[in-house]
Image 1: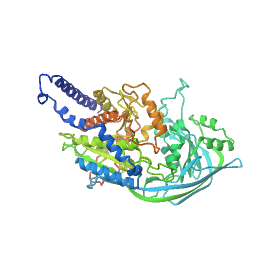
Image 2: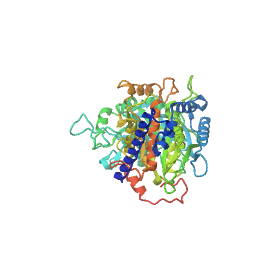
Image 3: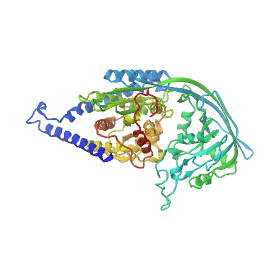
Image 4: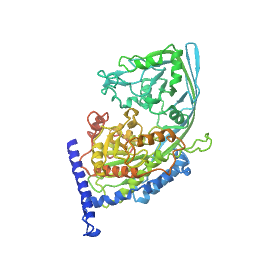
Length: 590
């Protein structure tokens, strides 16, 4: 299958290249021929209006609206959500796109509950009581839909990285019964050194430098719940987490959300918490343990859980509310009667962090780059597809999802309750924070080496004289931190790409400095606002590239596949081996 799809993609790219060359030759002959006499091949003529419609002015204008104070930070379940959903719906309708929900609307309701935790916590160890200050020392929530949760005198156990990974021969629990206990874990994957060179990581264990899903905090809480732990605590360390503790405390100390389900999340651990490294060291010292030594031992397969001889106490009061948030979805129907029931899905999350009335001065998290810009890009792509005289063979969905900032909830809900069968969904292409620093020579693929989608991306990037490159910091686990991941988890090939690291006509470190400054000054802060110094020319190039990738896949012969070794390949293979039941209502997992 892979050879066939690459061959068909190569033919498509050759056609695009020929079309571009033909147009250039025709333009060079303007001295002897008029514009109306220029010979343009059909595909080039078809794509040109679409590509030309993608422009920086429109991206900026959409971003300004979505990131305006009037939208109040686009928090789910707020007036800001109502404004956002209405704006997106109006734009899709204005473009002439069909409602994306088979029920005839542009929205998919996402039932969620909001919970604001007021926690109290303390540890006892070595005859001492360690009081914890919220949120400077720790944050703790209960995702159970109940008003109060108490965990009293719970035995504390250090379980290393909290991972059970049979394919690596790794088990941090070693058969320990943790029911009713409080487990303490490290963030990220175990840094297993290479036997050949101790200064490097073993590439055969947990992806080497690249984080796997086992290193993601969501996994650690999932396995803790599966094991029956009463409380699960992750020790925050900035470098392996890839973000400062303030990012955690800022998000977890406010209202959070989860998807509503019949069991009210009673299968989750009663308490999910983070503590600072400093507080963890204080706990270990009081328990007569050496934190650094235990951390080092946790990077070995023979690590065994260590009872800390300490007790944990948590008391959480939950302020609860139920809401119906919304994904916004529009559809461009494919032109081929045999293929129009197959789909390419573009995604971007519309939400951000809303308002914080406790802040002095500016209280609105406008989220201009994160992710008003990506949502603006989604609108630009949608409009571009409507400019095609000949529509692609397969259908295109434009899906603006809710609650990404609360744990990828909107995309998770869609993946678990798809409006269209996932085994008829060829690809997801995701946008999260567009480039505001100018054109680049390269394109970064987050999760490089996973799927054939990046082969399509590479082919189309050559038309822009660009090349694809792996992400520079795979240890951050960025592939697991945006909405494409929920599609990937179900088996749908998902592409998450961004502008590269080499800006055109700029110093070699220009992009890195720009991104570092954004992370330090604006990321998840009220200062993430539209700025006059933005250069959106790179965003335009990226969107044109994403358009070409989606268009090519929508017209190609075969389905893109996961590559050998991808953790998602088996799920896709199983999915495609099962017949599609088109009689089932949307919402049934394939």
